[in-house]
Every structure is written in structure tokens, then in C-alpha cells.
Image (cartoon, rainbow, N blue to C red; front, side, top):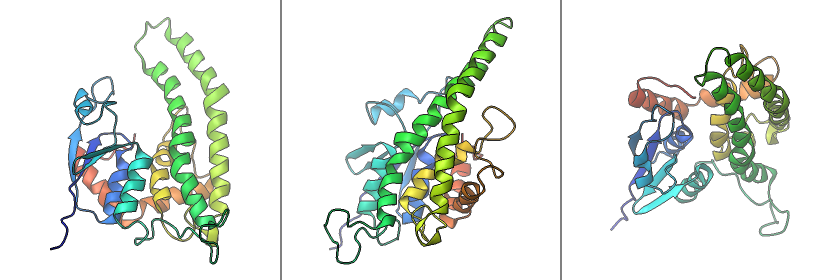
Length: 254
């Protein structure tokens, strides 16, 4: 008797990193269902998510009786158990004749492992810092205080946010330019789980934060900008967007 595939549920929160996992589920062609949650007026996740995981954050998935949190952990679990290598989403790990040896990994796999964790560990952490001056500008305050708040927010942007964005985006521009096989993806010629993980913060970086254009723009970072357009052009990405529109009535990345 064939083994019954476990039930996969994505606990979906609007305007969140859940977007990437929906795309991954579509790319892996896994049967799944979505349980939807809406942010509160203060933009925090609703308390119902704490019934799924103690921290009450999204994204989360449940598979059978198992609950899995943290985007990279979820992505790696899905790739491990649902054919990530077969789908080409995980590069071959070892160079010929170097199986199990120190420093025997392929460049594609080394990049894949790095970017799976760089996304959350470095890039998203830096981008979260950018939300602080944005929130300061939008927070209700007496009119005579608002100029002071705006100046403080501008100083935070000038001293911390803008230089950090520049450092990361310049780094990623060079990574696209030096990708194995000439790219066009981060790890080579084929889409991987790392590209899917990178999609959310890069699409957010295209949004205006402190000016008319986003930190990631076509003029300053042409290769990286073209890379984001490539990610958006994929069939499974578009199916995920259609699912989001079906759920929310619109697709708002952030």
C-alpha cells in the first residue's frame, strides 16, 4: 500500500515572509492548504498564531502533528522531504571525487547554503532596522513635535540605514555578476531554494523607503534589479501571486 503524503498547512499572515514559502510550495508542487491570519491594527500578528507556536510569529507550517517555525528551517525541511534535489532547487553538493571531503563542496552548493541563511541572518535583520525611522515618521504626534521626529528619523537613515543598504546591495550586485555558469541566478543557471528565500527582502528593497525610489533600483544596481524581475517572471511565482490575490484581494509585498 502506498504511503499517504502528510498534510501540509501553511499558516499565512498578510504582508509577511509567508510569501516565499507559498512560492516554494508551488515550485515543489506539494498539495497544501492555507490557514489565513490577518494583522491587527497595530500591524502585529493576531494572538491566534500563538495557538500554533508559542512565539506567535509567521510564517509557520504544520505537517501532520509537527509544527515548524523560522523561514529557512521551513524551507530546508520542505526541500529535504519533498524532492528539492529532484526539482533542481538544491545544487549538487560534492565535486567529482570529493564526496565527504573537507572543502569538497561545489561553489553552487556553498552559495546555496550561505544565501539560505544570509537572507534572515543579515539581510532581513538589516532591513528591519529600516522600519524604525519609517515607523517614527508615521507615528501620531503633536504637530510641533513632528519636525523633531522627522529630523531624528532622517539622521538614523543617514547614519545607519542608507550605508547598510548600500553595503548589502553592492555585495549582492557582485554576487549576481560572479554567479557560477554566468548565472542568472545566485547559485548558477537554475533557480534554487536560496533564490526563493532572497525574493522577499529584495522585493521589499525596491519599495521607496526615504525618497521617491527604493534602495534597490535599476540605475544603481542593474544586475540585481534584473535578477528580481527574473524571479517575478517564473510560472510558480506567478501562481503564488494569484493565490495571494485570491486570499487578500490584492498583492502587496510589504
